[in-house]
Image (cartoon, rainbow, N blue to C red):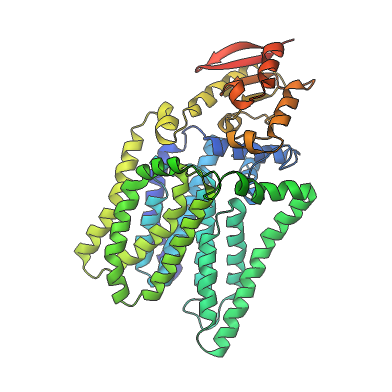
Length: 484
């Protein structure tokens, strides 16, 4: 009965998630979603991960995409349903975290805040990006960890082990997914240093249980990495991002400023409410809980900075701790009218941005909500390709349009599906030259970017001139076919 009442309290938040995302289930697939799906499909068909198909993400993310493909949802609609499923998990987890730290009344407030803040279309809240998937899994891991040792005489060791598994799975979907579980481990460590001796021993053993849980997914990923090529795996997971793009290396601060303007109507009111509510939160005896929340928010900000590119969807990382913190504080405001005003102030930004996004025509979603006008073009080119291809034919997006590969069922002929990796990978240019010079290059090439922008040496331009001819122009994109 008690568990049933928890679901009932979370039900409004789950409705919020569905209402904010339903319209976008049938929106065009994005570059990240399409790229992940294409890599996962190629891997499932026998291509070697991190060699024949490549992405700078750990295997757990691709396991998820392989799973939806295996059950017949390896398509744009299936990917959006995946996003909804993880958003629901993250929403319920944030409610559970707030309830564990502050009390049961905080569950509904935190869940509704989370459901709203992680689903805003204006900053790509509806897509199945790594930030949403890893953030939801990380929140779930933290929720299980807190449930397993808070308010208990002895920790629930199996629950702590499970939290480690789930937390590692979060990092296995995106390397920056460490913030929630790192917060939980810090809280458990501090709790292990206080209390009675028997409690301290049990909690220290609980830390070992969490660590053992962590080792399960990480060991599987490391073994697979060793079997498929340790150097390639390590470079994809650690080396590529640290050498090419992070807050410390080639960061895109202009993009940070631009995307801040997008999220400002949501984040700024939330921060004002947090600051105003924090003093009362401390006076009501929640100083230690505030430290936990601030730790999570700071670690999430470090995770946010680690990516370096600061796309709109990066802000999803911060929405999990921010919304949980908001819900917890709101629930403790003793004056109902003041509580309702603060709650409305938090939700008005997401509501206004979502309503505005609902009026955007489907063909303009990529341009106006994602800063990527290729989404509708990807669909049109994919339709043309399906009408003209023969068995075994491939199409290459010159030099990057991951969304195209999410709309076709054939594997990409070139392993690097995103623009940065074409130029940043050590063998990116040489493999591009080799593909066009081989006896069996792709039959079709869609010219998303100019050849010299993709391949400054001019080798690709030369191959297009000598071996290909234009057969169609679709949405201002030339499509080349290999000459007989």
